[in-house]
Structure formats: structure tokens, C-alpha cells
Amino acid sequence: MDSDRAARMRARFESREFGMPPPQTHHAAAVTIRRLRDAADAAAVLEINAAAFGKDAGPAAMTFHQLRLNARDVVSLVAEADAGLVGHAFFCPVSIECDTGLIEGMGLGELAVRPAWQSRGIGGRLTLSGFDILREAACPFVVVIGHAEYYPRLGFEPGSAHGLRCQWDGVPADNFMVKMLDPDRMRAVSGVATYRDV
Ligand SMILES: CC(C)(COP(=O)(O)OP(=O)(O)OC[C@H]1O[C@@H](n2cnc3c(N)ncnc32)[C@H](O)[C@@H]1OP(=O)(O)O)[C@@H](O)C(=O)NCCC(=O)NCCS
Image (cartoon, rainbow, N blue to C red; front, side):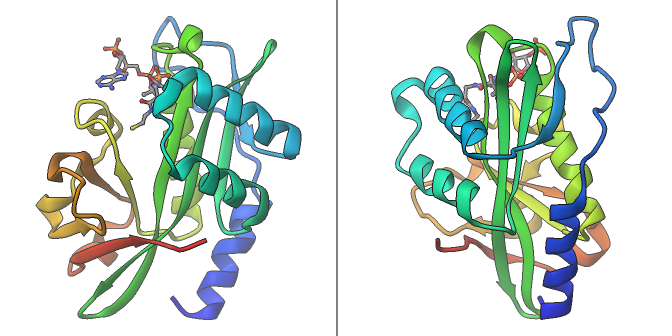
């Protein structure tokens, strides 16, 4: 990605507060989706992860925490209820090197909702709100490593269907998925998707 495009993408990430998409079900929770603002929000996100993932948060969790606090070109969203923060989604830079050059996009690094608030549409709304922000920033794709039964309902498809692979050999093909935000730009793109080093 050229530096102008990167600067434009970053400016858009930073500038935009956004509205909440309409509730998806009649059980939808009364939450506001907004950007993560400060260290107190980031601390709440760690608590949400602990509650949602238990001991399975994984070694990437603290890396994501550092990125949340320090990196500018990430998108970090929270779901806020009267009781406090109840869910979050975190997107960070991912690139694909292919014949036509380096294509910059994003990866959904973490998505978590407090157990008592799950199955009320919050995970979906966090993810779709992220797509809206990224689409406006001209981000062409979002990859995810996650549950093959959950993410397709948010529009993710197997990476293998588009000739895309994960950088890590241990990830089962079914669990590496991609959401095309700009299918035209992605038409000729295939290769290995790589998360940016911290
Ligand atoms: C996955 C998660 C973020 C979904 O958030 P959520 O707010 O409950 O999601 P939504 O309300 O948008 O969607 C709920 C639906 O997804 C389904 N779902 C949730 N997790 C699922 C999974 N692992 N596999 C398949 N379906 C799943 C629920 O059964 C529910 O189905 P229904 O609508 O038919 O009742 C949440 O369950 C969570 O935090 N889980 C623990 C952490 C985690 O696994 N994060 C994802 C890492 S890959």
C-alpha cells in the first residue's frame, strides 16, 4: 500500500464515530457500539476476554493488548451497556503478498462477549460495525482465524475458496476465513495472509 493510501486509511480509522446498526433479533441487547477510548476501556477488554475465553485466550492476547494501547492503524470497538463494557472486537493489519504486489487489509484478531450477554446479537454487531469502518477506509478484506460454524453467518468464507492461506501451518484450513469488502480489488489476489509483527 502506498503511503498516501495508508495515511488516508489511518485518518479514517481515527476520525469516525459511528452509529449502531439496527438490532438483529427481538432479543437484541441495549448496547452502544463505539471505539475503545482509553486505558480503562482496554483493561475492561482484558476482563471480557478472561470471562469469554477462560484460560484459552492464547499467547496472542497480550500482543493484541499492546496493539490496542499503542498502534494507530488498528480498529478496536467495544459494546457498552449501562452496566459497563460487555463485548469487544479488535481488527489489526494483515497483508497478502501476491503476484500483483502487496495488498493491505485487516484481520479480526479478537471477538469476545461476556457470557451473560452472548447470543443477543452483540458479536455480530461488533463485527459488522468493524466492516463498515473498514469499508469506508477502503480496506479490501478482513481475515479471521476462528470458529468455522460462527463466522460464515457474518459473511466470512473459507480462505481456501479464494486461494488464500494462513501464515501458520497449524491452523486448520476450515478455521481460516476471509470476508471480501472489495471483491473487485481482491479478484486476482491469492497467497499467504500475514499479520503484521508488533
Ligand atoms: C463467539 C462470540 C463472540 C459470539 O458473540 P455473541 O454476541 O454471542 O454472538 P451473536 O449474538 O452475534 O450470535 C450468536 C449466535 O452464534 C452462535 N455461536 C456462538 N458461538 C458459536 C460457535 N463457537 N460456533 C457456532 N455458533 C456459535 C450462537 O449459538 C448463536 O446462535 P443463534 O443466533 O442461532 O442462537 C461469543 O460467543 C464469545 O465471546 N465466545 C467466547 C470467545 C470466542 O470464542 N470468541 C471467538 C474466537 S474465534
